[in-house]
Length: 208
Image (cartoon, rainbow, N blue to C red):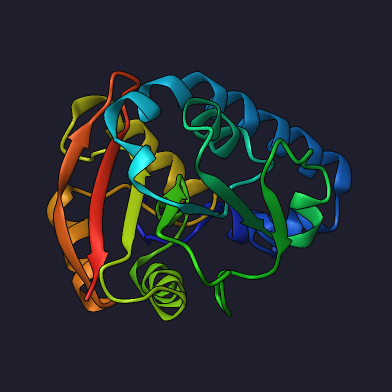
């Protein structure tokens, strides 16, 4: 905390992503935990937004697809694309959506009417977070929706999560104003925040 240095990298010599890539058994535990967390908040997220307005939803960094499957279950006319690292999506079971592997620092699938980023940006400091947002912007036409699903730092129970981000992946939780600033830098117009019953917020923006 005194230095602002990522504790995990300081102890292990690599970041959490490299660490898990070298240890498939650890990666499997992490992926299962993220899937369980997504299932817990699926209903709250789906209830907080009208996803039926989109023809194609691209879930960027969507793990094994728990959130995307939950959304599509309530909107059978919507198509979905799950995008994450190849080793992650290799464990995903397609539940009516397309699966694509790759790096969100390089490019993401084109053709979406809405792009989801759930529990992604808080893993990173501002510069890499903006890189991720810009990759989404390059794939999106003007007016395309971007939905960032994260905790709101202004809430008291998010402070411990903020510390956890510093210790683990090296990121941080953010306020709505901080998300708005990131989005503007990456070529988006920030539209507002919608809290959910699961303690996360949906920060909505559109490509400009």
